[in-house]
Image (cartoon, one colour):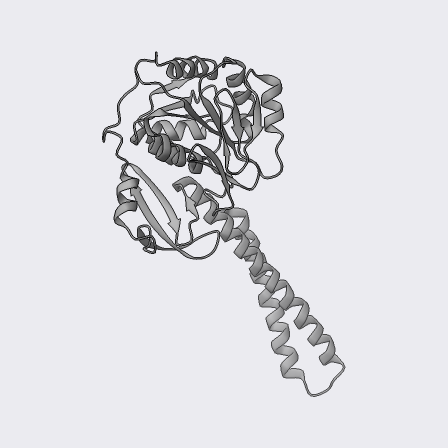
Length: 321
């Protein structure tokens, strides 16, 4: 059995407990490097937490620095973490699924560089982040593991991965640690082979498509991040959405981000209507001091009434989305 010495782990903020449990059950002499992306919106103390609660020392990944076995490298806030030339790479690239760092960025890069040596682990988290990255790992001959959704605090990420990827192991975190040790030592069983022998369709598509070409079939929806054109890309059973500048979304994330963009647009409309009410009320007061403007005053009062009615309607729409 081949040895796997690259372990990539994805989770959301609710997965700290699962990460601690995982590290607590990994040996200090683990002959593999572990990389973690947890969705964070501000500065993170995750490395300190993991170092305190487990056996492997954890640290924030640095740009263009070599990585070693027996260590955990955590993605910093506001930067994607990827692997290239046996070094950790940080970049301020486009957000994926509304996140930076994003799980799929790490998973895809590990799969491209280390292929069958990679183990991808999806822990507790919301939406379907990590599914596309886990698919890329599996398609390149790596191993796919998810936390048992019944154990996960937030089961969406592992459950969606189970639904979309030919997962090798679905286990509680403590048993995941045991399997990781077996995989690193080359003793694991029940690992299924990739259906395409490790030749990922994303590799083939990228090789065939010029870099300035759109990534897929354009759909009549704007990117929630930058309002640019959106293209749908299909990989096996997976579908993802990507704009021309690189923002990427899974189906769940795309739906949620589009809803948030709609909410922002509605709040902008509410602000503009409130501005109209204030402006026109001021003009009406001005008209009371000037004779011969009765028609203008009437139109302004009608505009105020219509705007107030529209404001009520928009707030009702906001309550429903």
